Image (cartoon, rainbow, N blue to C red; front, side, top):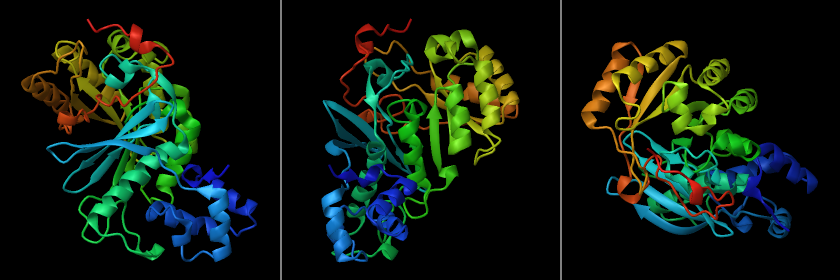
Length: 378
């Protein structure tokens, strides 16, 4: 059985080449070919000896998830549905902006968290994605964007590699990666961390820790473990300012209540590449958007260095929720800003192709049967 090199982080790839009797620098060469240039054909890796290329052809492969469907929204947002086998497919989204290009990556087929306002959580869960399937989303999209930017060269050289997804004149390179797609990243820790290491490695995707963001609903012990092993920018799906409401919207709060979660956030900041935690807060009409909720949120903001990102709810069928009116969101943000907190309101992108926050659903063979028993929101 051949080894999929997309699933090997820099240390594991060096070990793979050591097993072939090769020097460690070969791993760096192949990292550049595979991840910077999106190359999957070993014969085209022209600075490798012919014998090594032949050896790799029989012992290794570069295989990303296969494309099922691609969609593009009117605002330029692009969504890819990628097959991960056994009837499961995940979605990844690229959001182009004037000064950045953000790729939203999935880490699980489905999700066990069952947040009541999230389409992914409503469909249930099948399995964790492998490191190759996580990194494969970045590899696939970067390669697709590069191919659109310039015609593929017949024999590219590693030193010609540019930023992710970009060729000469490319306008939409991937500058940021957010693990905010399908799934709870920390519950797939052993596959997510090697993927992060590839995103950060100088010879692979060469992203700054500040430009890679992991979003979690708040798995406290794993927040601590991430801080110790591979700290990147951290976003926490907060969505409520008190335990009673948060437990209703985000069930894991019953296991890790707000006091424990906020303490973990303060500990994370000891090693975080940013000096704040981003708190994501979906705005639900009549549920969590009152002046009293804003006042409670101010107290949270004063206890943890943070930035609040208000997210207008993105509807999906039978959600049971409505988006807070624009004026309500504006006044809510003003209350946070008046208290001296940093607050932004996320502009909804890709809503017309179900690519907005909370809308990713993919296709999952649910092993939890959660989709059949998920209650509707009150």
